[in-house]
Image (cartoon, rainbow, N blue to C red; front, side, top):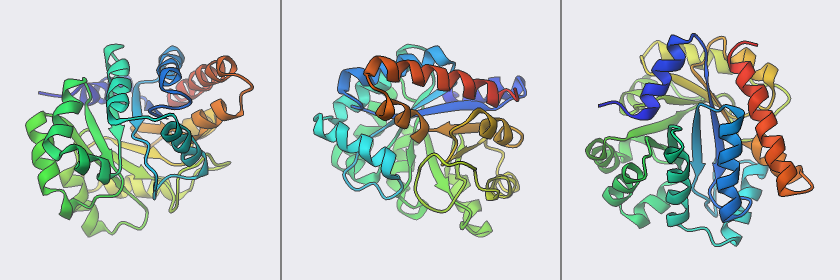
Length: 266
């Protein structure tokens, strides 16, 4: 049985294009307005949504996502709010996953978390900070819940390690295009293409590139070789920079529309 995420990648592959995956932390800019951001993503034509589980010590997140996470935590966001945001997206028919550091999963309970993701329609979970060697319990729980365990690889990942990590993934492999933390950049590292090629040499899974994408041209360039393009900081920045939530939502939809053209090579 395939997840909605897997079905989505099959669909975009048949259309000979990349998928646009949009990220938003649950509870940002407020718990209720996060749901409106999800609506704005959908209106803009994203293919999948990544719901972030706000965390107080995010090792992978740059200043923009960190600022959003702080706002979400100040809003009192809970694991229940994360799951509700996930259900908001999946109820709209958009394949969706949760990105979370390991500590919240451990606190929730490994089996319970996997089952809760499935119960709220989620396709899987992205883990940026747990190694494949430490994932025995999680991989078993994900398999039982029939959700995708998704791991992050970087340019520094050795070829030997790529084999191990990708063997534990399903859904897609998250390729971090640069060394460092998240954040929109003027250019995406040239190392992204080389990393994708290295992943393809050891895995048949779709490869989605994240970290740094903020423009239609960047999306168009990445779409030449990546199965998916993950955009987070640019959407968060559009909201943070807007004079009002209404203006922010409009900016999110317009950015999504531009990026959706880019992943189609336009």
